Length: 167
Image (cartoon, rainbow, N blue to C red; front, side, top):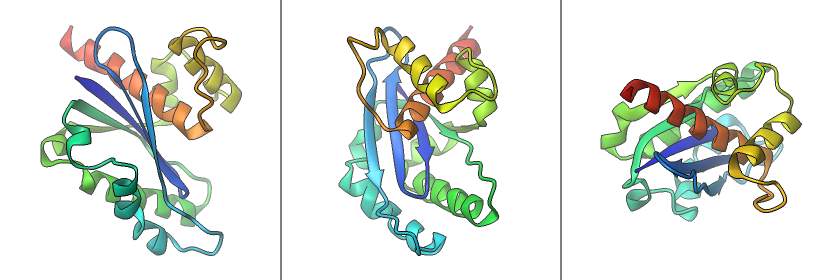
């Protein structure tokens, strides 16, 4: 079984899955929302399903997923915050029915704490922590975009919560 960490932006949906037990063995996929500067949240949300299909993030992809952890969207701007909420909702509706009760949200301060980072960690700190947990940065740097590293650490935090609940 695997845990999914999901990071949503107005440009893409990044999903990283890791093993529930043993080595993480991260798998990253990105659904590009083809966002353009003048797009409204409404037009961007309309692209979510097509992007998820194109990234093969539908159907059987989710068969091995035990839990989904979404980074709780945050934005300083009201319009972007609205868009992130709409996109997150659209992604969730695409998940199989069996996962609907297995979705949780983690605020950035929560997942950072669960992976041993300060609440206000910088983007560079996030990348370094992710690489540290994946293994030596020289041996296993996947050169992901920032949102993928966030999704990876959200999955790691979710795995920590799963293990605490099982203990």
